[in-house]
Image 1 (cartoon, helix red, strand yellow):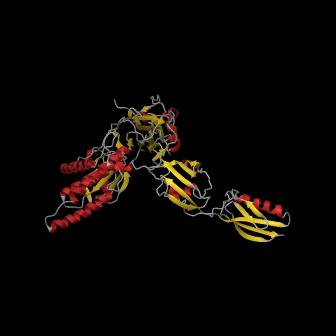
Image 2 (cartoon, helix red, strand yellow):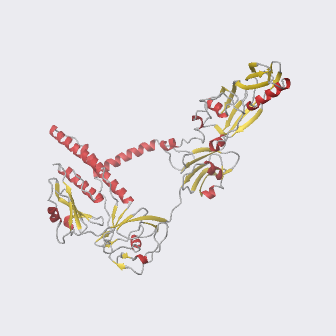
Image 3 (tube, helix red, strand yellow):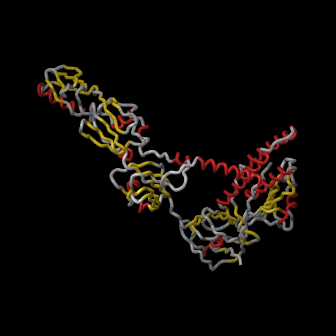
Length: 581
């Protein structure tokens, strides 16, 4: 016996709000209203000639791909050149030297700048003694002031320079002398940049220039070989600092250093590297510091997308190639090695689906349900008004059905173009006819491709509802009862009229003014409220039906007219629209 559609009172409705699970037990206060079987839409088969041509072309394309396919060591299966090209992943930080660090520069003067030999100091004295002069800092790091003597200033910060000079002046002139000092300019320097950079050499700057300024002048770090995590600054044999540019990339921290002429910046060879891709905002090669590190280091660096749950780790170990598929918590504790490849993925499988309800019913419109729930189980828990809802015409819209309808329509249009637009002509008269047919076909195909199938799945037939399993994203329609019949398509006055029992489709068409001159009087369809579309001569009309009069193809080519009529019928079934020609 077919499952029944039950109508609940509001008091018997279980909790079905979004995010709340509901009981699928049969309510005791239900009233049986009837049910339906599931109807499916069959797809048209390809013509034998077109299928044979496609098969031959597919074999030729596959042979070409096989010839261009390479195999990589340690990989299972072939890798195409396109996939190899996609493997060009940049190291993290590769965009660092596109920001213009060597562009606009200041004068090198700031409160933290340390005075060096060769710097120019503006000195002004007034009062008991008058002096206005630019004095250089000599090789001993001293500023020689007339009548005062040498004042040691090397290593004194720019902010402390004025106080140091005032102290020296007031030892000779304790009263009535005012002092003003300022650095006029700093001594230019040359810094060597070497190691794994694009253009090693000696580059000019000022002592207060940043490390990135000199690296940028050298063309940046070599993307294939250079390290972004180990950049040394040498002064003679002494290492002044070792910079990790990841700190600057992630937190903006950059070690400050006052360079001297002859300093050397050395970019070391890139260390252990882990490649990260998959569900990340951008794939990168990440350089790891230290020896064996855990996956937590990669999690701290990689910009993961929302919802990532697992990581596939591939690499080489002493025993040979390895591969592990891990949840993120387990991955965070896994030791990683140089050359490991990590692919993140959002691989959590939900146990629920979300479906939507529309039409004539009471209660919420969206429901979170178990994956194995059926249409009948949901309908048994939906309260409706039996006087308003047409419970025998329930239908369902599904995205996967819409996609198949769209693909089927596109395939039909493609075959139409292939069959008729490529046909040859043997006479000038036939060529003229072919040109007219081509214009007709091009216009028809253009309009047909604008049509959007509705993805309607017919689940009600002869007042029986099929108990199909629901899928995520399904939209269930419980239509409202109607007392009218809609007449549309190729009729003189498309309109909606009151349903009269016993009248045929042609009776309603006469009430709509009759057929237009463009009507195909042999192609009259009836679209039911449950989404079913049938020939008018095969059904008995009832309230809520829609009569669709299709147009006739404007061509004398019988084969072309038949093909266009088939596509028009296909469009009417999937959209409930009679496409106007």
